[in-house]
Image (cartoon, rainbow over all chains, first blue to last red; front, top):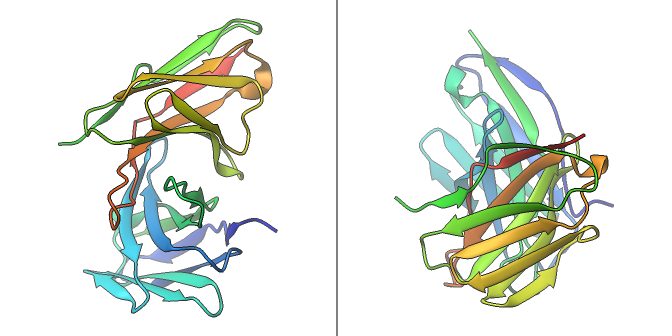
Length: 111
Length: 114
């Protein structure tokens, strides 16, 4: 079983749609969680951290369910510029801040 | 603006060559990492370093070595390049400051071994 699993997509949605991505992780002792965004042929960039209570940043909402080992990202009112690959990222125990990256979910927003 | 700089954006090397990929960060971060990224496989950790002259193997260290002689610089070395090492290589750095675990990535080096 992969340590971090994501649906690869692609998710093809029209502008203005709401889309949700899910991610599961295998190590129940994992300590912190993130969503990164990666544009085509570019490096990943931190989109947002994911907190136990859930958190929101503009049109983006992240949720964490520790009992189910499940992380989600909700994007409301999708824009063309949201088209990218979204990486689910987990910081397992063991120190050194050695993050584990999911393979990513591709989102394509069309007019 | 904080930066991680990788020395080359694109490289083409021949099988058997020794290849050096350089990474420099200006954030005084303790931790530095080398990943490779391949379609469908995501980012896989090759090596990381948590201090000068310290290094630890990641998940796929075979065929690679690293060097960290100065805090700001972390080099990845392909001892004898092979075609299966054709990939995108990403360097990242992070702080050990608790509560700030995010990585800053370099722009990547796309290596082709022919």
